[in-house]
Amino acid sequence: MIFVNAGKKDWAFAYAMVAPTVLGVLILNIYPLFKSCYLSFTESKGFGIYKWTGLDNYVRLMEDPEVWQAVVNTLAYTVLSVVIGVFLSLVVAVLLNEKIRGRGLYRTIYFLPVVSAPAAVAMVWRWLYNADAGLINYLLSMFGIGAIHWLTDPRMAMISIVIVGVWTMVGYNMVLLLAGLQEIPKTFYEAAEMDGAGPVQKFLHVTLPMISPTLFFVVVTSVIGGLQVFDFIFMMIEPSNTAMASTQSLVYLFYKQSFLMGDRSYGAAIVMLLLVITLIITAIQMKLQKRWVYYE
Amino acid sequence: MQFKTSTKKHLAVHAALILGAVTMLVPFLWMVITSLKTLAESTMVPPTLWPETLQWSNYADVWNSLPFAAFYANTFGMILFRVIGSVFFSATAAYAFARIEFPGRNVLFGLVLVTMMIPGQLFLIPQYEIVARLGAVDSLFALVLPGIVSAFGTFLLRQFFLGIPKELEEAAVLDGCSRWQIFWHVMLPLTRSGLIALSIFTALFAWKDLMWPLIVNTSLDKMPLASGLASLQGQYSTNFPQLMAGSMIAIWPMLILFVLFQKQFIQGVAGTGSKN
Image (cartoon, rainbow over the protein chains, first blue to last red):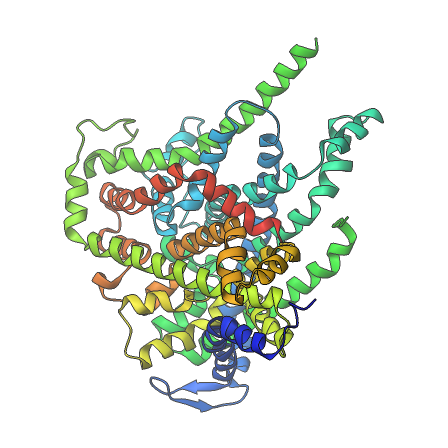
């Protein structure tokens, strides 16, 4: 134990080692956190000048139908993309955990969207979704399905964005889940087989409990990612689009208010709302994990 | 019989995987095919599956209409400095947090952990104001700054350091190594997989970040590819052959890097999850 507590000389060394990160975190994260919180109680008066206005922004927030619609949109995107995306990731991971030919190739292909810039992804999907000359509507027309306005029909646009979100997240989550699957000892399956378990029972009683910690991690990070959806909305739904109201997320609204309309105080209040929602949802997940996550 | 059922099962597995793989690949293929069509051909119904004449000029037109060389350089610089900064500073901090007991350790580490739980958008307005006060908007410095240290990286590498047996350090001390020598020559090489994982994670995150570049760098020649492409869309809104050509110009280097180093990419991403 001499090392762990070798005295004050080591303390100086330790402080020097943590200093860049701690200072960086203080300046770039902790101070901004308090500053954003403060800004949400002020009114912006030109660059860097703020006047304390108490709860005004929050009162405005509560009465702003655009904000509530954005909350609904954000939650809808999160629930849909996490449920569909995590389910598909798990299916792909389980299939790729089998000893089959071309595993590496499949894994590479599924991961391609992960390494593509969101702006490029958004553009190609905007093109695929094009109502008149898009590939998807053409393929559907071969089955007699009429043109769908993927990105301009307010009832469709959110689903279209969820599809793109899922398309980009499956590869990433699949890799995390596959790593978890490969850590399950073969003997567990052999023991289950001895007890006469079929494939479904093996999945339910061996795979699922053993993968549950990784699955929990994947769900939590996907939920946090979903709550912050911005890129695809920004790139695929132009401000004049009739579907904007039914797709704009809290983060999009934050960006619009803070950086396009210059109302940073109101923007700060919007991200404070996002913080509260994120903390509540994460707390609920932490509580619920005791019911389904299995730790050895 | 055994053989037959397993072949049947494998056929079903392949069918499902191929369906998924096609879904993953078609958008990329359609991007390439469209990028080589004329505007008139691209809007034809039914669409042609292969361009009648390959329109390579789309690439030249797009390349000349926006400063793509600057986009590449800015992207490369942003990734390089963020990776160097966050990996180095995370490693030093993670080592101290994992292996040295010093007053305030838990408080300081707690501070680092807390920032991981907060949506990153909360930092953006004050970070922008810091950059603006330093007179550094529209610069490489502005692109790099928020990623120069990493709370996540510190957390991740600390897990790796915690997994290294104490005996190795003890042996190094008996050999008369200084703390720094122990860190640099003994501990750091042992966390190589963690360092690679963090480098790849940091690079991917920087490469895909869109909102920060949109906010801080509004001059075209200071943009990375992410926001440069957004301005391309603003310029060509529905000229899809040119938009697709621009997208291809933007994404091919990363796609090639991924295909060449896919083992590192995949292990890197897997490494960010398994140690939680």
